[in-house]
Length: 145
Ligand code: DQA
Image (cartoon, rainbow, N blue to C red):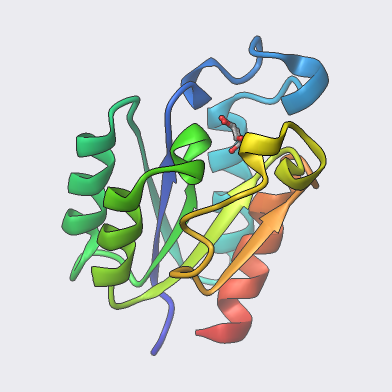
C-alpha cells in the first residue's frame, strides 16, 4: 500500500507540551512535533494532518474518521496508552499502518506506565527519543508501507 497521507493523533495533556514537565517531555510544543512529521513527509509527497483531544471518545472518533482518509496513523495516546481498551479496539479497526510514539521511555518510569494496551495492535512503538521519535515514525512508515 502506498503512503500518501499520515494522521498524527495526540492524546490528553499533549496540548500542554512546551510547558508540561519539560524535564520529562522537553520544551518542544505539539506544533513542533507536527512540523517534524511534516518536514520528514512533505519531501516525499506525503500530506500530514493532526488532531489532539483530551477525551477518549474524541480520540476513538478521530481513529474511525481516519479510515479511508489517511493511509497511516502516528499516535501518542498519552496516559490512555496504559488503559484505554476503547482506543485499542479503534486502532484494531483501522486498516492502515499504525505507529505508537512516546516522547519519554515509559518503561523506565512509574510502574503504571510500563503497560501499553495499544502496543499489541500497532505495527510498532518508538519511545524515549523525545521529538526525534516523530521523524523516526515517518521513516518506519516509509519502510513498512
Ligand atoms: C507519554 C507517556 C505517558 O505515560 C504519559 O501519560 C503522557 C506522555 C509520552 O509521550 O512519553 O502523557 O505518552
